[in-house]
Amino acid sequence: MTILRLRGFEIHKGLLDPAGQRAVLDDVRAVVKSAPFFRPVTPGGQKMSVRMTSAGKYGWMTDSKGYRYAEAHPDGQVWPAIPDRIMAIWDQLTGLERKPECCLINYYAVDAKMGMHQDRDEADFRWPVVSVSLGDEALFRIGGQKRGGKTDSVWLQSGDVVVMGGEARLNHHGVDRIRAGSSKLLPKGGRINLTMRVVD
Ligand SMILES: O=C(O)CCC(=O)C(=O)O
Ligand SMILES: [Fe+2]
Image 1 (cartoon, rainbow, N blue to C red):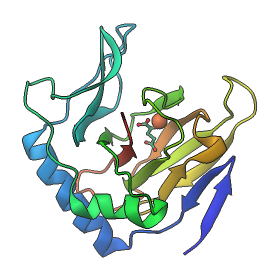
Image 2 (image 1 turned 30 degrees about the vertical axis):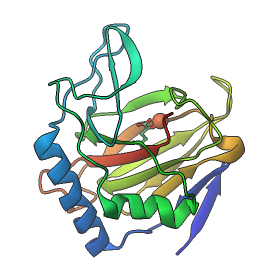
Image 3 (image 1 turned 90 degrees about the vertical axis):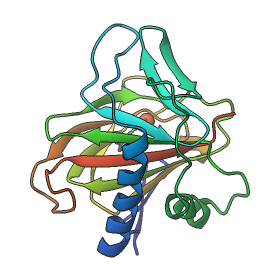
Image 4 (image 1 turned 45 degrees about the vertical axis):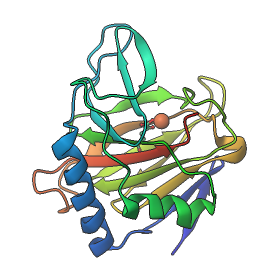
């Protein structure tokens, strides 16, 4: 197993083997059954291209009222628990007693992307963010703590897991594009990304 370090992010290449990816995908499907994907709208009124849902005490969401963590899905139901197998990835890579209270699930159709941003709606940036890639490859761009400036890009493949922590916790990052047809994991193509965060 190789670990790449890029701008302070740790990229664990192929942490999940194909069987592990399928098992995590089954867990994601169970979450999505009770908390269906929705299409979030930015505070500025733009529909995001990704579809989202969450597991855990909190879900991350955005609408006209702003970016925030919410204790209920837009349909009013509480979020399902973070599946054990997904939590185990957090345990393996961070070794922390503290557990994430949110696992955000993003679905990228092949034409979806995510603009450069920081993950900064959490209370304490000393806790890392752990990000799992499933399905088609994504061109992931990493910058610094300030907007603009130099960036580096890397293709994330199914089974890769990124740890965004330490000095790099507030580095800007985004997804420029998805490489259609690059994985057979999702029958209809596209990509799923899971990000685990400590919220409170
Ligand atoms: O899809 C990814 O790899 C990153 C997702 C992300 O940055 C986020 O949800 O905050
Ligand atoms: Fe992010």
